[in-house]
Image 1 (cartoon, rainbow, N blue to C red):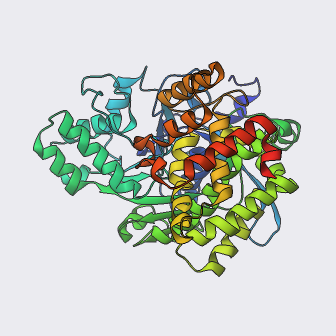
Image 2 (image 1 turned 90 degrees about the vertical axis):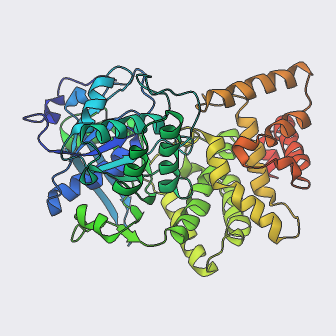
Image 3 (image 1 turned 90 degrees about the horizontal axis):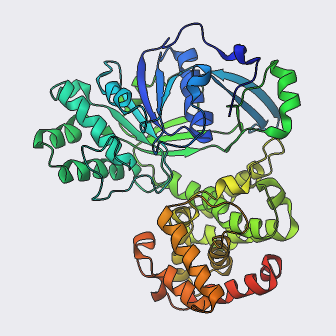
Length: 481
């Protein structure tokens, strides 16, 4: 990605204009259109005065760093507000001071650990990001996993400030997993133990740092390439880092009230809530919005569709999604049905936002970890509550995801081991070495992903196999019936 000649419009007068208070793991569209956008508004409205440094959690890759335009980028908010009125607003986000690739800038990354004003760490590294291993080493420069990189950073800070309690940080992981705060804390302590770091460090992590669970909700898409002419007419320049986002946003933080005070949320006008228990918010959002996305994506892609809106408006695919939500997802959630139905109606309205072209392929990233976190709980709970009856639409989505991982519809981005397994598995099916039933049972037996052997769920392997056979021989639309 390269800037164009008129990008002088997005150059700041002086670098590092704000004190570095936030370290952000994740440079993707979502974090820029959700978190950084909110920080920028807090700086303007409440005087938070927070600079952000972005760290690429995996590093590598050829995509340009935001440093190319001094960390500045544009967020376009458009669509329908909560009253149904059309809105359109551009904002140049100025809070990001720098972006680092630790693979090539590791010394700079560790140097940030001694930043005196640093107070928050935020992350969004997909559901697969908060994971541990026994292979990352303390001396790796950098370690491969996000939690290992974070542990190394925190140890650097602990050592530089000699374990000072007031130099602990507030951690706001935004990965969509249950209790993401404790999960991240546990991952850090895992590496502290693996690397045999001194006991004082583990105590400092526990006593001086605050790991908050969070819930994030906003649809953010990538660069709206089809609207370049309109954007250029509006702005007078083109920003290759521009992201488009819907009007709606929600950030729920489970933590002490003083976190909200430090973020200067009072009077901000932002939809940020500090709560004692995040569970009801999470179950509703993960089950219906994220679960709806994950259920829809493989089915819609295999049906020849490309974006969320056209999929929801498609009579057959949209009907499939509505039935999956109404008849299989909502009955599996432990909340008031009327409240869930109202939330679902809002979600489907957001999916139909005419201003956002949300590509299905972009949502398909790491589909299997998303399915395990977002859809499987409802699939299993529905089955338990209906005397062993399987939710046929969620089962079909499971089969469709296996078909999608044949790899001939879109380029797949997932854990390398997962991609290798399906590449080899489908090759064996094509060669006649495996039946579809063996492919299905092999994948359902991945206990590291599912947390259990799904072959033990009565009838599931047979149902997935039958759906997969229909998809393969008759096509997705025929399988929808």
